[in-house]
Image (cartoon, rainbow, N blue to C red; front, side, top):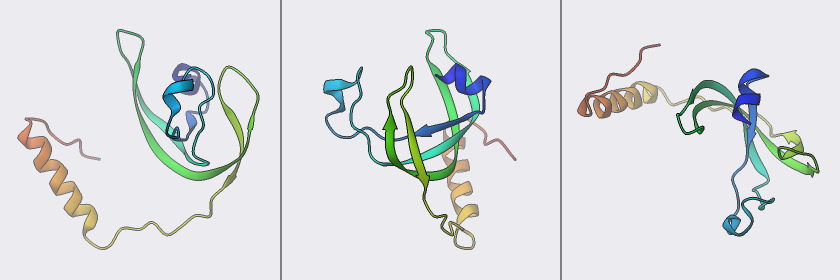
Length: 113
């Protein structure tokens, strides 16, 4: 799935699995009806075939109904109304400073951008 998304639109819908998902993980365990479309901004394939991915959240949706397709779970969705998600003045700088200190303690540097 990650390979297909990375070669295509780079967009993927993500929804959390509901409690009890372990009993039917390989099938169709129940999901929460609200999810987020994420844009794949970074993909790293690991030697064992798994992936590390970084997603940038784009928009929330509500599942209207799931489609019976394969190989991936697909759904008809409705966009949730967009909300003002601006941060209070100075909060971004405070969080950035905390992350910088956290990384410095581990001998890492924060990427600028």
